[in-house]
Image 1 (tube, rainbow over the protein chains, first blue to last red):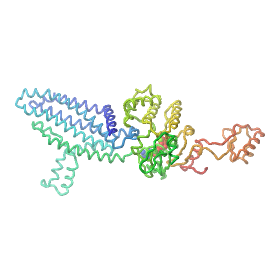
Image 2 (image 1 turned 90 degrees about the vertical axis):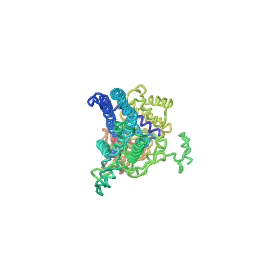
Image 3 (image 1 turned 180 degrees about the horizontal axis):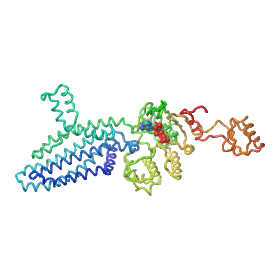
Image 4 (image 1 turned 90 degrees about the horizontal axis):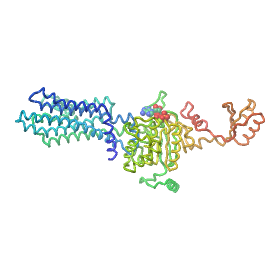
Length: 270
Length: 337
Ligand SMILES: Nc1ncnc2c1ncn2[C@@H]1O[C@H](COP(=O)(O)OP(=O)(O)OP(=O)(O)O)[C@@H](O)[C@H]1O
Ligand SMILES: [Mg+2]
């Protein structure tokens, strides 16, 4: 286990030197901060606007960082040949791969926490102003505080899953291809409901469509379940049972993805 | 077995088994190890072809050959960085790539690459931590190694700002961090200044005297000749010559006579008794099968007015052996054995 953490730590330190990723983070924080200003565009729904922009940005920029960090983690080591001296030490390929992933998770988590903190600051300032105008919405706003934390927590697991897919894709394909693959996976994963509908015989799906679309629905990750923004805006609580089910599904998917990565990387020449 | 045990005592190792057989004595063993990347325009395989070698503990073993002959490929195979297309190999009795033997080895890659944002101390800390080293023991080891490779004064410079030779030096330090029993060194002295080269050669022999095994790849034959105990000469992926350096350099008891101020008439006379005669640098060099023939020839030469420049046992240089082996059309010219 030890080498995994050593590799992860080195990866974490190294990742902060990637200017491009720092750029994304700064840009994200600027957008989240400026949701403040945008909010005036929708009088009466200012808080909703802040939440929409804030959580949406965390999710979107988290995903971007996951893709651009994840697809570089292992290829950089191979192309810059830093991997040679590391694998010549008592570090197995599996330990190396999981160490890189874990270092990416740490980096991503830190980035997300910074974005989340920026969002919470904006929200904590906006919410009392909103309440002063609409005291009758006190219940909804109270629910928002905990729901936002839950939403961010789900987003963590969502981007960790994307990171896993990116890391593994990069062991299989060239860099450009792995970036495209991960994006496609992400967007198509958002449409998994759509595939379910297409495979529904009651909606007139043919036999072939039932099989193909049904298979797609089962194979693809269901990224939309990680998005609970709507529930927050409605002011409904997302129960922990749903949280656990969603996180469980994400982790199970991640395990399968990393297992595939392990099998591929174990045979990979460096 | 007894021989092994005494050998082990001498090297200060402890005996251990892998459950089936004794695994001491041999550091590296390969059997028809091959890595064929592609085939060239003539249909010849490119990479490494059927390499069988045995490296005993405590040796300096030289893997020599021209550029592209398969030296680095061999090292990568032995370290499990790439996988053989055929054949097999073991390091310390373990299959290639096993984590068990990696505890006991060090590796200096060719033109080594490291994390650019770390300085020398941080880099060695990282590599040491991969072995589970830490605390004051690791700090002491790092200081010792940085001094050994002449990087102590420059220990806070980041790798990004290193010169080529500094990379090489830190590369040697990281290879030694775990006090390995077996070292894989790819072009140890490349990029080093003359003093650095001499230092590294001393380091090699010091390490051997400490009982370590050294597996060195190089195309610098003059450097390797006095250092290596055994060598293999590779060419275009194939093994051409193998043996102890002495074996390769000795030419069956011949005597060599070098003359200057010679005449063509003398040359024809000597050629009758000599094994061979050749002209190089205006000097006439003749080789004789035994001493009395050489002595007689020397007398004749002196009487004919020639000057003896040198008279002694014939020894080739590794360079000559090498050129003879790899110079021809075929990957390995075995004709003149
Ligand atoms: N990844 C690869 N793919 C295809 N061919 C390769 C690869 N790596 C090496 N080769 C080829 O294999 C042969 C041996 O290369 P290798 O690097 O082992 O040579 P070398 O003896 O270390 O040479 P040098 O003295 O220049 O370091 C060369 O012809 C090289 O072009
Ligand atoms: Mg080489």
